[in-house]
Length: 356
Image (cartoon, rainbow, N blue to C red; front, side, top):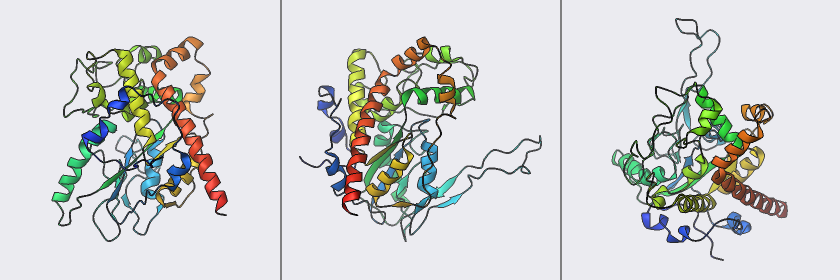
């Protein structure tokens, strides 16, 4: 079996594979896993490699993003400012606690001003707020071309190592719902595809006004244009394969099949992906994959204490069924990811045990 290419070359020809439209990626989770760990990734932080973190909402990405900039043992650690919680004495004129200051980090290569990490905390949302796979593929070459124009030393052959985090779709959906009721909108997200933004007709808003914090779960579910639906699939798929957000060029069934296959395909060839439910395994797999070490161990979430777990037991079977129905692609994607994750973990454990 030919070893797959694990870094992403940002060319349209390499991405728009016609095979995605006809060949299901369903249960083909074998990498083969030993090949995945033994192939020559050779991430070189001192050369031209860039880790690109595709941050999907409510998947634990904020915590993981902080690990990347604050918890890696590096010869030249990221230089971070802000991000600390305010103490009780730090209040505004109305007596309210000031918000946490924004975390901003410079993650330079050793003895260089070039960057090795493209993420929220290292570069900011340079490709758009929570940019998806499609946006990143179109934006990254332009961003680094502009970045290089401001520097004397230019890099012509960067390798982009995509990484992401996933979460059980039902819990993720409920967590996003809670976040929206608290005022989250992500209005600044661009959803750019094929060089343009979607029209209002292609992507109508689910609400009027500045936010949707009054929404009931029933109404949240009812909006068929809600981007929370199948968010993980949409953000990992190449939307150019289905003409972006334009829905009239093919049947919904064909569109969904292409999106799901594309998301599986892209996930499988990423340099790394983690699952929020497996923090210890995430840490070991990332460290082994990139040859980097974290300073402090990852802490596993107590899922009995999350909003999603608390509210899930109170929902009617009908509501749960509806949530599963409108997130059916994410459920299939997550099941695929879980199988692939466990195969890779078991393979890595065997490799580690064999070297002891």
